[in-house]
Structures are given as structure tokens and as C-alpha cells.
Image: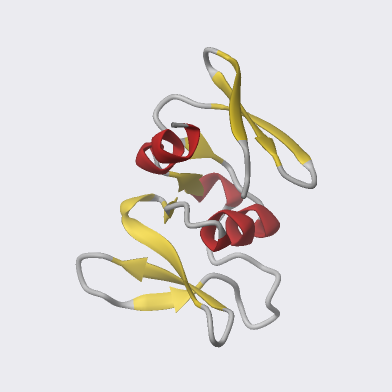
Length: 104
């Protein structure tokens, strides 16, 4: 399980295999593909652009998708190459509710 800790009042540090420190207001912002995969695999809610879109994984196929809550429609997290995100890294973030549950 990923361990989360506050390194200062406005920063959250992740204890993953690689160091990441990101300024937060109400969410963790700007995530790389590996960070997105890891967070989703650990049960955190990763959003794209706003809380109406969530990254989900179908575990049997290891297929990561961006799902729209309003319509249920999905697009792939990445383009066909499996590496290029369908969106900017700055568009992905972990919702605050996920942070609170993993911190508490």
C-alpha cells in the first residue's frame, strides 16, 4: 500500500518507488502515466480534468480507461502506443476524498 504523509501544510509526499512532491490545494495535480496506474491500482480515485471523469481499470485485461460519470462513456487512458496519455499530465489528479481516506 502506498504511504501518504504531509511534508508541510501545503505539500503531500508519496512514498512510492520514485519520489514525488506536489503542491496541493484540494487535489493532487499533474500525474505521469506510471503514477496514474499506481494510484488506480491502489484504489485511489484519479480524475481527468474534473471530478466528472475518473480513470478506471478493468483488472482482467489491465485496460485503463477514462470514464465519464454522466454518460458512462469511456476512452482509453493512452493512445494506441500505450504510452501517450489522452490528455495532459496536468489534467490528471487524485481527488481529495481519496487522500483523506488513505491518510486517515
